[in-house]
Image (cartoon, rainbow, N blue to C red; front, side, top):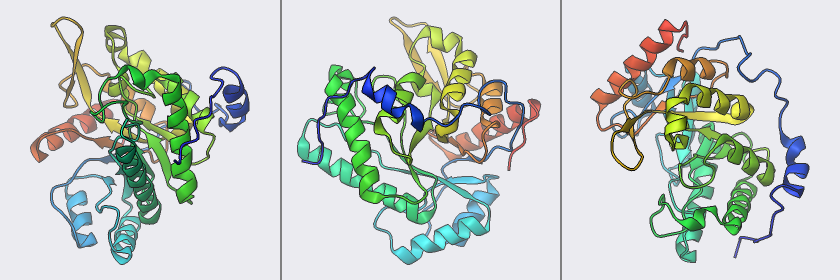
Length: 314
């Protein structure tokens, strides 16, 4: 069994040993005044065997970042061709998704999920993607479900050891391994993300920012501008890719929060984009929409909001 279930001292040796792993906070935070062009991206329609057709589609939609166009196991010459075409045309491949339950209570399912993440991180490194991303996983049958075991101490330990195992198996030269935050599993806040980064202790373990997934209370919802700033202040040095969507609250008991297309919720996109522009070449990726028409409307809203705030796009 690959997982060594060591018991970590959550507020002791982990934090003390890991503190030197944190980059200097200088240059990050709300006082940063510089602004970089933002790289916007989204899923593009079609399946592509010709990298030049893929590039044409991306460019026709006005994007400068893209999701990975192939799956693990693709021929190496095709992977190299997509990487070459992306680099030649100044397109950043943002991420390779490895969506699976690495915390499944069924050991066979869990081991298969870990293998999938190893393969996805290997692909990310080969194709020049910035990161491989998954969620940490759930201690139950539903891969992204809410379970009390998601917050057990040994689950934290398993997440740490699993992330280390994946990175150590691949030894990526450039790609990062990241976990997308979720509302009811770790990481679920900037602070728990920092705790995991310190505990994992690998240079190639970084942060994937999805602020909407961490807005799980009315307090965070109504004060989301401050929460966005907190995310960037604390995680800025680690953020490698961003998922961009919106959120609204409904008058239904108990608390009922729902995703929306950017522009149809209450997330402060002026702050979101301003904070993103303080990072360099971090893809700002749209997701979870049902049609290309919706992606176009979302992209238009993001660009219009950014331009009003003095933000440019690559």
